[in-house]
Length: 182
Image (cartoon, rainbow, N blue to C red; front, side, top):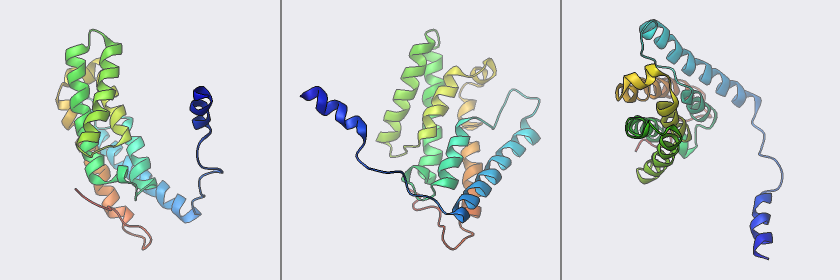
């Protein structure tokens, strides 16, 4: 009986699909994500090409989904966007430095600890988990950056997205960003 109850949870609690998003909302989300990632990519190409530094990491793509596609979500707010990446990068770099000899352990401790710290600091931002993981599984160039990884890309990248989100998301009357700062 307990197993049946446990397995029944996996059916979900809501019937049907998520609500549709209007075409204008889709276009605004697309345009904002394009501009946000374009800004990060352009700055990366302009100032960091040919160096061992980077401004563009995969987790910023996931952040763009939140700050341009789910602007009202608590997970998309500035505190979460910047704080989640910064804390997660700190955790990831530390885990690589302390546990890098056991990559599987460094990876799992980095992501789990990043989630715990984001919860405790009210900065939960799912792409932060990816940032922590990138700090551990990244290339030799990422590892050589050490704690500089926290500044470039894990602080500056989200700040660029935030600047674009503030300017762009507030253009249409139906959008407002952010919902809260702190």
